Image (cartoon, rainbow, N blue to C red):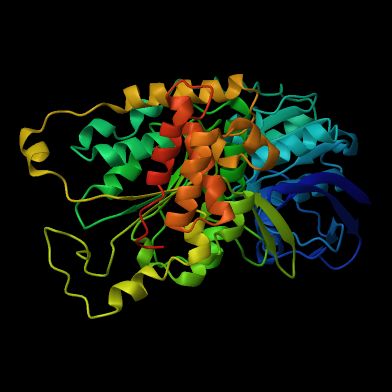
Length: 504
């Protein structure tokens, strides 16, 4: 007898329907799984056998074949344990076949038959609702994220195989899943900008970067506060919208980074990978494509500390996401497109010892070493960074006096007000994404503005890309200044924020 149940497969951030077909035939007892399964799916045979027996059901002494269709789609992960087990119970008439009709299931079985959480449950629930499935059975640990999806599909969170079978058979009530409430503002949970003493120019650059989601490069000697400044940026960014929070939750769920039991992500991500990371780790990769750090930082902050220590080919991999906001990963087994629009923040020293151009220190690097170090950030990548500033040593008076500086809440209020002005203009995206006609409409240059930009192109050697990035930053400065029009002062400040040329 053949019994069929459906299960969602994760392909990148997308999903596909997998038909789990189980055939029980007289013959020597055996258990085979076919349909291009990976090692984790092949190992499901032993987990399913033990789980069925330890939940008080009988493993039929027949030949069992589980086919995961379509056969040309690579199946990965342990989420097929539960649908295979339910199909076996239905095929052995220990569960009515009608109970699993139109039902999807996903979950990993422990040897005692209890369920363990699986990655990508939110994407699976969205797939089930989109395709009109009657119900989706998931581990109870994944219930909070599955409940975020609105639709006619019933989410059935269960803790064991027996509970799943009894709920589907109508012997138990369907557990009620309450949607996760919209969380309060969590920006107060991140480090505060008032902890950073001095550095008024860097604080201003952070405010502008946060208001327009502009990429930022900070260069200076060790101990100037570059890392402290970067770690306080999430507390300056506007709160997430619900749609953005669901997008982030989906990404981190698929990547297996969502803690069990957590529902909606309410905090913008902050990712700070080590400089030894590979290109695949940064932008995504693998035989079956997985999101990289640039996607895990989507809508948040991607912080590359000691950027001069990263391998040049790793930094060059950022070109596509910085320009287009997506990463296309193509592999022999599959291909995937991942969103990648973080606020990129880079920090580094001007040379390996950190004291080139430092009035308070002496550079001990051999001749030419500083130039080689700075060349790791290639011209094309540096040209895509909107704001480039120097972060000098902290003024000793500021440290000794220890007077608290402006807190993050005050800066965040100005950032949120500037973002509201952007929305009032009918502009859907942050200023960092303005281009073409939309950019020219948002920034209309008068005579003084043209002279400023002509001088900047001559003095700084701006490329066409650099020209546009100066205009975007100027638009953000005008928004912070409550100005509908971009004026000469806004352009001059934007040009000054691009004038620093070390490390690119």
